[in-house]
Image 1: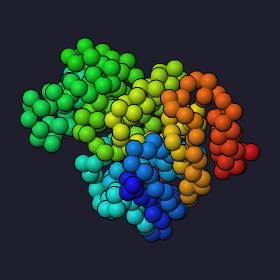
Image 2: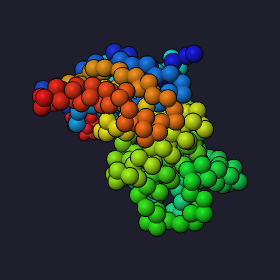
Image 3: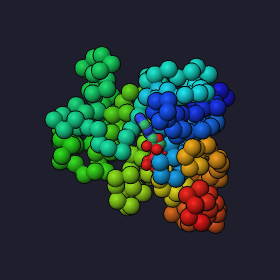
Image 4: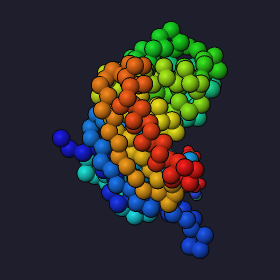
Length: 256
Ligand SMILES: Nc1ncnc2c1ncn2[C@@H]1O[C@H](COP(=O)(O)OP(=O)(O)OP(=O)(O)O)[C@@H](O)[C@H]1O
């Protein structure tokens, strides 16, 4: 099977000569088609920067990010991004928000309406099509953001702390929903999170970054069967992974 996302020898430096600093020193990882991979690491280590480079929203200072062997040179139709901040248009209905990206792509109205309805259905928001974002909860709005990204039918869904602003219970439930959608759609998902338990709940593998100037310090397999029950997530295997991640994070932040 061909590699979906390849991150090779990537570094990222910000600033101008004299005041520049290295955010990412060296990142290497390969993500397979259909995989669910989380990026986890200390605060400010470069998780979003790495995701932005995969998305083509930032350019590596050195090295290459490729999708199926083709270097990423900018935003690409094979990828769609979901951010933590609600990026919905408040003056548009839920239906019109989900249609937005399709409209930009010039998709005809009938097709747009059909696809948007399917995606609204997929994220469990049937009946809310004519509501506005302000009439929905935070979790529901994030479902809309996911529906809008999925409407573009990307091969790779890039998610930057999409549930970071939600309470713990909603977050866990959104994770279960996301896994259901992932299972149905077969998309590759790259998911940035601060939450160790969320990474264990969701991922096939965790890319664990060091502190800045960062590297991908470890790539951790999450060998829990799917679907993952609440018991699986508090099993010895899950606890061992959590402990292993915590040890690295505390060591990286000098807090051990
Ligand atoms: N456009 C930019 N210009 C200058 N510095 C930047 C830029 N984007 C990010 N940085 C810096 O690069 C480093 C990595 O930032 P990034 O947001 O990728 O980290 P993160 O791990 O996602 O952070 P957090 O844990 O806070 O979400 C930080 O020190 C940040 O201030």
